[in-house]
Structures are given as structure tokens and as C-alpha cells.
Length: 473
Image (cartoon, rainbow, N blue to C red; front, side, top):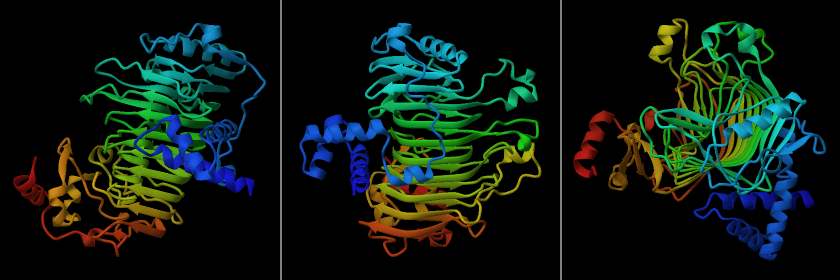
């Protein structure tokens, strides 16, 4: 019974995170109302749950990360030991973060404690056996020079600066046993003060050649920028990586992470290359929450043995996207997916080789996901603030044309949800969907899964022009 209460408490907290107001008081009030206890008791309950890492029975069974952090071993405090200043992000303090990580790594690793504050940093690279512990409520502002593409944290081995000089040993190097955690609740990665500019891009966390990693309790404040908040990639190499110990982000857990104001072309998580990674309690306001879009460029991309549960998307494109391009992906198993006023809950595309990839690799073929992949327990809630790609207009009931607003780069509408699942695989591969529930839909209410056969006949480009002439604004 105690475990059931713990699970319910956390689910209550997670639902509250996805609402309009994201305050600590709001989260604790919700917990108090749920249990009939005081706000302070609710706050104490939630804090204990988050600090202890006790979120649900299922996590223990599914988690791919194995705990290696020594809770009584070596540790440093960035404020006390390295002079980190809570200066409201006025100065770039990346060197302080990196210096502490490097020094501790040379001693065999340990814990790096970041007290609550507002700091500015970028491109901080973790090293093996380093656990970055960031106090809940901390705000990390991204140091992002104009005209650049950057990230806040990088989980990858260090290599020579000149890529052309890399040997196979350089390319196959990796780090292991690392984590980035909010302690006592989520910390914030914030680059919401930047407008989207062509040629620029930002990620909160980028992982590549890393084994046994944990990312948890992270909120990302975006402003419709290029790239997903958390991106997992493989090592693109000219060598045969099939015999390497690993060639991509491997054996990881990503949980209790959210993004706000995500671009419709991106979202919270992007998986270009990953193996044995579990995702839990993910939320995106905008974009795609779990983006399994692989194989766009390079023959080393692909995901294998991916599991996920409790994936939520609100006012975006979808919660889960399968887009294999030219990658031959392994098994993906997802449970408990919810979309709230998003175009879909789940989308699946046929795959296809991009022109640039075909020029580079003439043997490239349409990608797939392995037989046995599935998404179970899908809920789609209708709303009118979804991010809808313009070419989906042939699925959109004409009665809703008046509710569409062309917002993002002439590529996406803001408008009504369409249905729960879009399956455009055309039999090329199968991702099984089970137990689909729809709330508030008028059109497609009896058709939770649509295919290309459900699109209205006609030319989508002509239909878009027709909409622009009659409703464009």
C-alpha cells in the first residue's frame, strides 16, 4: 500500500508540472488536495519523494542506469570550494564548472554540488565518474554567443581539437558512470531570452559516447529555438564501429524532464543514436516529447532497446514520433502516452533516404523499427492549440479551417487536434498500438488511427493556397 501511495503522489506531481503555472506552491497544493493533507505536509511528502528518487515501482524494473555514485565519497561545493558566484547570470562561469569537474575526475571522480542560484555557463563536458548535483530551483542560463550553435552540458569523451587528426582510438573513446541531477526537484536550463535566428541553435544536454548515464529532474525553458532540449547521438565515424565497446549513448535513464515553448520542428528529446536507454515522466509544451527520428544523415544512426513510460505532450505535434529515415532500428517499447491539445499523440512515418544520404551512401535503404515495437495506453485529449504541419491539411476537416493560424515559418499551423495516432508506414514496418482513448473529439472520434487512405483527395499545396486566400492571416 505504501508503494501505491508513493506512485500516486508522484503521478499527481507530474500532472501538475504540465499546467500553466509552474510554481512550487502550485505543485504542493495539488498534492495536498489529492491527499487531503496540508500544503506544508504535501511539500514535505513531495520533497522526500524527489530527494529519495522513489518515483514508481516500474522505474526500478525498467531503469537502464546503474547507480555508481558514492553518497559519502569525494565531493566538492562549487560555491565554497571554487568561488562560484550567484550573480544573476551576469558572468560566464563555465570555467569554474569545468575546472572542478576536471580536478575531481583526476582523483577518480565524485560529486559536484551546485548550490541554488542563477548562473551562466555553456559547453561543460562531464568526465567519467562525475555526478553533477544541482539544487532544485537553480537557474542555469546558457552562454550563447550570437551566430553560434551550442549546448549547456556535453556527455562525451574529449578528443583532439582537429577532427581530421582523430585516430580510431580517439573516436571510440567514451566516458562512463555519470549523472546530471536536480536534487530536491528540478533545476532549470534557460535560453528562453533568445529569439530564433537562422544559423543558431541550442541544446540543454547533448550525449554521445557515454555509457551508464542518468539525467533527471531538469526543466528546459526554450523559445522555439532550433534543436531538441536533450539529444542523444552516435559517433559518426569512417571506421567499422560494430566491434567497439559502444558507438552511441548507451545504458542510460532520462526521467522527470520537461521543456516549455518548444519549436514544432524539435521538442524535448531527440534520439539519433541510443542503445538500452529508458525514459520516464517526460513532458513537452510544444514540439515532440520523445522524438525517435533517426537516420536522417549517416549510416551509424539508429536506436536499440529503447523503453519509455509516462510521456506527455501539450499544445504540440505529438508525444511520440517514429521517423526512421534510413536507419535500421531495434525494439522500442512505450507505455502510457498522453497528448493534450496536440495534433496527435503518436505519429509513425514510412521512412525514406534523404538525397544527401543517398549521395554519400548509395546502398542506403528505407529505415524501419524492429518487429515487436509498440505503444500501449494512449490518451488523446482534443484542443485547438496544437502545432499542425501544413501538409496535414488534407486530414483536417474543412470546418476547422477558420481555427487555423499559420504561425511558424509558413510550415506549421496553430489549430485543432486531429486524432490519436497517425500511421503513414504503409506496411513498411509495424509499431503496434493498443488501448487508445480519445476525449473531446468530434471528427475521427471513431477512428483513433488514421492512414494516408483517410486524407481527402486533392493537392495539399493547392489546398494550403486555398486556405491562405480565404483565411490566411
